[in-house]
Image (cartoon, rainbow, N blue to C red; front, side, top):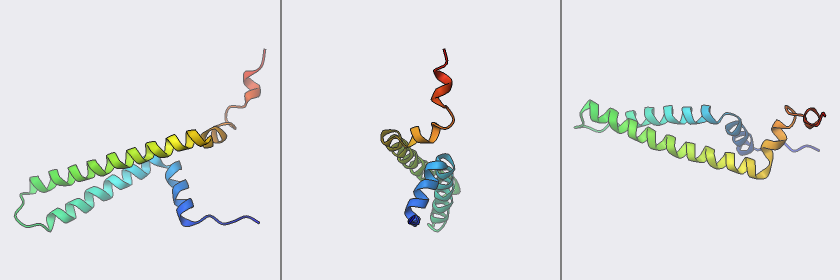
Length: 97
């Protein structure tokens, strides 16, 4: 009997397959959220609000890239990448003499 994947497992699988898209979406949501928060704070110039939003989004993006690097390292360590790409590079083609 096959077990259905939990939401966390399916989300992790999607993030592993679409790392750059995940980081881009996180950056966009970070900058939008930071701009929305900064606009609610009175007494700040517009240029300062934009600079703060960029800095917050940049820190969030660096954290996401570090997380993607950890996932990539774990995948290589566990051998998941080897199984994924093995079908594209059959070993029989390399042993011809």
